[in-house]
Length: 252
Image 1 (cartoon, rainbow, N blue to C red):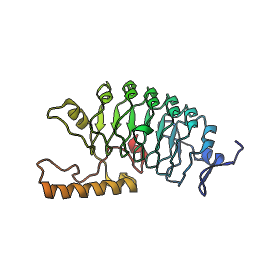
Image 2 (spheres, helix red, strand yellow; image 1 turned 60 degrees about the horizontal axis):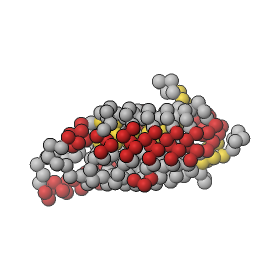
Image 3 (cartoon, helix red, strand yellow; image 1 turned 180 degrees about the vertical axis):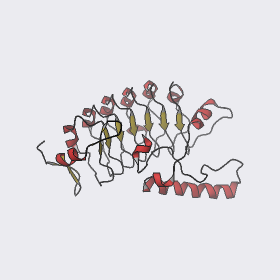
Image 4 (cartoon, rainbow, N blue to C red; image 1 turned 135 degrees about the vertical axis):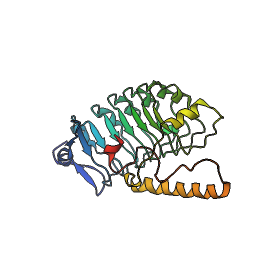
């Protein structure tokens, strides 16, 4: 692609020159490109010309599709696509074998949109699938043996998928606000509760914050009508955990 050629979206374009100039080196020495909140509705193909890029933030845009060529971004270790409109991931996502952090929170993924190839991401340590439309997970996720943190909150799961219970290094699992019915003393319930934690309201993007506020109002109404014995999900702070933050450094 010629230098300066536009890529990206109608009215909002990213040129290769712009992308190169936006590359920054993190305190950890990683080369990071932040294209978040730019109104993009097309994944910029010019990013293929940035082989040294290790971290990519395309969160809070209007992306509906992740193209097949994403599999060619083999140097990317940290990928943030939260708060877009993504309905399906391509199988080529499994080619990103160096990927350690993947954030897909607050999209439109259902179970058919999550390919079995996600199980090929053997180096993945953090995966956020919260605030989607998932009713099941690919059985291949049992191969994610390095996974430490998993967000499944605000989906449509009727139970914790069996593949999750088999992950040997999983330390934090947030599965709140799914239509689950746990048996008393169920080990999966304990594991699901093990790693939940809170974030400040100012750390959430606008869309996620609004959804959380609506959920808090719903829980308050439920508390008044049902008079539950347990604590509310929210006690001064907002869930979900660790993601959809304006400052993505905190999520890392």
